Image (tube, rainbow, N blue to C red):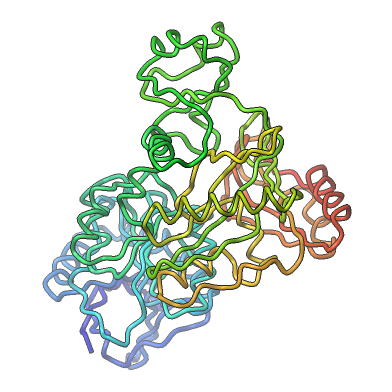
Length: 496
């Protein structure tokens, strides 16, 4: 058994503070329900309220010496800062409490030394997720069903995923060294947002770490310019476009309007997209490399989620219809399956599967599409990860998108993508005019409705347009489904 070491701070009944080391092979720790540990062989009851796992003895001694140099007040602050996290961890099933990591502000730029930890052949998969938002949170909820040791890298220690992982590491997912050292020694890595350091993922991939999807695909998709060029090269139907380098380029293509200007890199959740209907509106565009995409007369916007494993086998979820908030350019609600002729649905599925196979990468992909007024299917863009359009699969599909991604990463057979019942989700967005501690007005009314499931993301602060949660509704009757969608939209508000 590989030896590891705890660096711990202890408190006892007289409120004295101790610092020391403990080898994890000793049997003197036992877990209490409230998420604290106790030395059972000491005469005075002593509770460990803060600890870190350190892989090597020299590193543990160095950390111990650093903590010993702290003032009593600083030690107490560290304990108080992390105590609530231990409490929350204790409520989670299948979590490894003794592996929780947290770093003080002086070490916030440090990276975990996972490369030093030897892995037993029978040990669970060590999987890292870059990003700790709601997608990471829901991935972790699905991970609890498998033998997976989970790691999260995120700058915000209070992010939605922080309290559900085995190891939380505070750090910048865009920084090469941070991402590289985070992934060193892990078995697999996935993403919940495209804005990650691809160079570090490429190096990790070259050293044997499996990255889902492959870094080359993330690199191509994260830039809308290269993404659109890939569609063109692969003969994937997509709206006509022009690449612009700055606003002067947009002005020189005024005859191409009306169009949608999409910034090449950095756009997310409705940001980085501007509709330019006439030359007078060109100033709203982006003075940076961007895509000027011809506006399409849209009949419906749909999404098709495709899973592909390491063997190249695919599984496809039924197409979902998406309805967007016109002001925020965010998904307002969606309905699955979408109501379209079979010929259009078959075409959409065929295009989506063809595109994913051209990516030549295992993973889960959300292919967002337009169906124009003539019934033509055009690819809008791709998300190389779990996606908002697939949240309904948690309750409404036999295998959720989150479970599917774990199956891919673990090498298990792909799951059943069939719908159990028609469903819809309503995004819970922060109300306009409210910023501050989140209050969910009308939640009791929604919880009293049959076949509705509320997912709150654990974000304590709301602001206008911020994604705070979603509600899934299931019903065999489409009319009943849409009626509940609008009832929820009118009754459940996120205010402060």
